[in-house]
Image 1: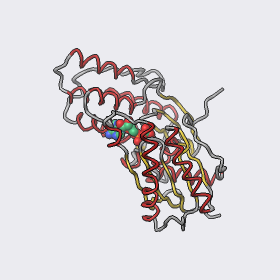
Image 2: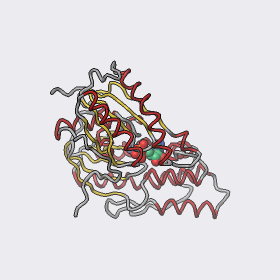
Image 3: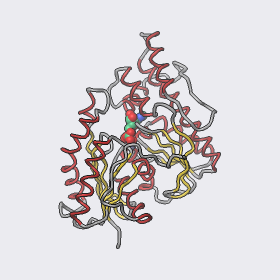
Length: 338
Ligand code: KG4
Ligand code: ZN
């Protein structure tokens, strides 16, 4: 069977997304409906609300993505359906997986379950299909902070991860404490532009100590410091916090890339949209004579094009998932050792 066009579906957290990708690398259409406004007044994603919103939004988002690809509810021209089946919020994942299985059955095409973390790794391949291997990927999102060596598509070795908060979670929590709103990452990115990154020396946890990360300490430091210095400029705190987090992310990614002889460092996940992180990664890669792959912002944050791309690759290499495909909220990128 020729496998050209894959419909991707993403509902693992607070973005409802659908996309059609051709040949695993060409985006034909991509629609993302964010639930930010729905969750903003709670300062974070409310799982039950997210699941209900996916139910309402998925049909119009699918219609739009299919129409933009010259298809419709008949699925004309669609060769397979790929869907995120973990990790994520259980109720949200169920909405996407149920829809994907129903469409695959109705259209008589294969369905494949995709690991959301693997999908983030495929985002950069959509823009740079000829990435060199091995690649060091820093995957930084609201739920994850991982350093991964990719020796070829689908071949991953986990070097380290966070032992407490994810990087994006730290951005979100600090932004909420500073009254900057939700989601916190873009807010801190914006406000930090007007602040002094040297104003406060927040801790750089585990710096120079292997490839694991810890971000709960820096968050607590921000809270304690602001309580002790209530007159401090918010922009200075935001800039100093961002600098502390980015220093650690960049130092560890750089050391890991040198360690494994990576041809390039690649960013993935929502925090990869951060301007300071992007600039610093570009600088250290240029200094070290290796490549820097920074996916466009729309491909860093959750989207369905990356799901379709990863699904295309999984289908070509492992074949389809059974229609008994379930959701796995705690799915890992690399299986945990026994
Ligand atoms: O990958 P993503 O869209 O969803 C998850 O799978 O988690 O990542 C969302 C995270 C949020 O924590 C958000 O605050 C963060 O990415 N983020 C940023 C920026 N844009 C989004 N963090 C720092 N700077 C940004 N510009
Ligand atoms: Zn994500």
